[in-house]
Length: 151
View 1 (tube, rainbow, N blue to C red):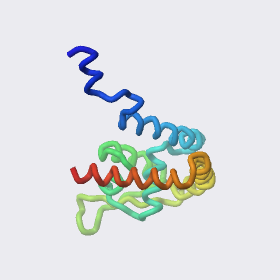
View 2: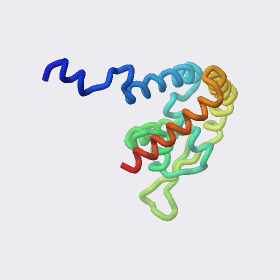
View 3: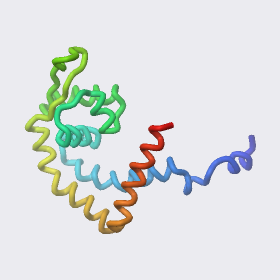
View 4: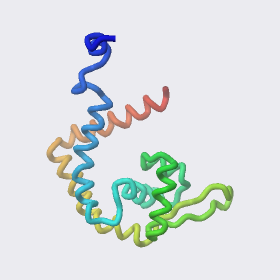
């Protein structure tokens, strides 16, 4: 296959949805990573803490889905977070094969220490991008998730 044939089949990278989503993710996550640089957590651990604070104790499968992490990665992340005292894990009373993860006081403290700055970053993005466009973007991304889940 020649370069010309490939180019006819593929969109330019500037109009490629996967690449555009990755670029947008980096635009949003860059400032978040900077915020977390002086924190005991990285962005993956931050997402786990956010999920647990928002919805309460959860099994690992649910956390992986909600925090956008692969289960094997989450298992490794939770091991470190548990060692650091950010979370605890206990066997599920109904199914001893499952463990339920709970955020602990040090994990809540990490969220508390960075909540104001994280909220400010989001508000700055909303202001730059525009409230209506920001909400529309979130709606479109939710729609995209549901379309993909149905296929």
